[in-house]
Length: 208
Length: 208
DNA sequence: TGATATATTGAATTTTTATTCAATATATCA
DNA sequence: TGATATATTGAATAAAAATTCAATATATCA
Image (cartoon, rainbow over all chains, first blue to last red; front, top):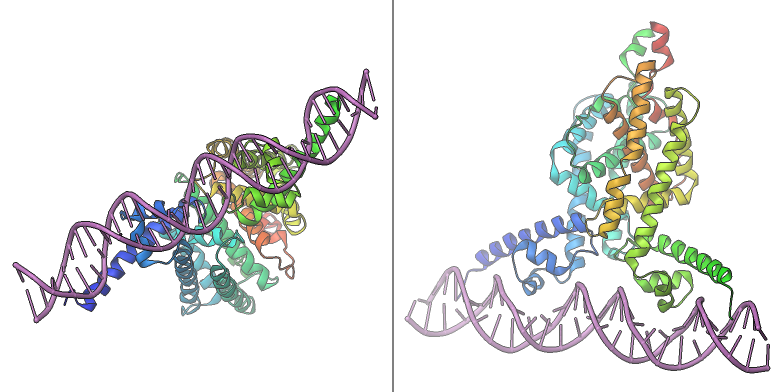
């Protein structure tokens, strides 16, 4: 016998992870089509041929990464939904957390950028398009429901909750994309500017 | 003699315009790298070879388009700057106008999307990168100055005007990119949600 | 009408990139 | 240590795309 099954499996997983990271780096930097197999292999420090031992094609890696990225954003939105605080507080907290993440997490920016790239081209693999179709709206729906609850509670401004959710996510996305390409860190972002879009302020409550 | 100089020149300009439009359509749809010369030629209804009569390469078309797109956004920001109204009003008006444009102008969405794509890849032609480097910040600077003036005037909230300008443009950008890929028109956007991020509201003034 | 300059075509060629594959290396177990 | 299964390499091949170019079409003017 040669290596045991488990050992090989473990090697495979580690190596695959290395390829995934290399591919993510390159895709985010250059985009799916500008990235050559050679670029990924070089980034991962392996020969081109070996890549095909782990993935059947460049597209397959891309689909794998997109799926992961979408799942991450869905998870994040669920974790906000499931918090045991009031709806208005959820929006406030989520924005605070998201702004902080934009300022400090490279991984988060990469995730946003990958999804944005993918949503921006009809030339991506069909499978990736299906995944986006299926998963991309979930965070929008989650926020929409929280907005609606907040309106009932009286902490969120009036207006179509669908629209509020669109403003919520597109603002975050726009910021993430800006930060992912401008590594200007001189400006400190204050999440309260964003949250003032949605939250009814104390002053007004006091007025009543 | 054959055709006159002017006639040929006119034909060239018209044809070139046709190619530019076709290229813009394809770039926006697929991205620079996924778009093949063949795609542009087919979209313009001409043979591949003819394209090289007008442009030396795919990259050259891209640079031409990016330059145009950047100039358009700069022009738009200047037109706001030069209006004869108060700073707070400028911000309100610009947002109202931008939201309306997002909802109604395909061209504007294409422009945003092209710039976003270009800013998102290091693999675009050097010349395009230089143009972006040179021109992309101008609208940010214009809004920053207006925000600062509005703060002095007392109509714009406190906070680093650079930051306010970043929130301004990234929100608009995020929206434009969302709308450019989701042709869901069921939601009507209300610009006042965005403007409440920046403008001090009447109620508070009255309180003083 | 014929001469001619330029536009236009599409097949041939070149270049780039993806994919395959034969050869070699490596790690484990008997 | 040797047998063996799998990992790994990099050159060979295939596929796809960009670019060139010889041939042809077209519009104008003399």
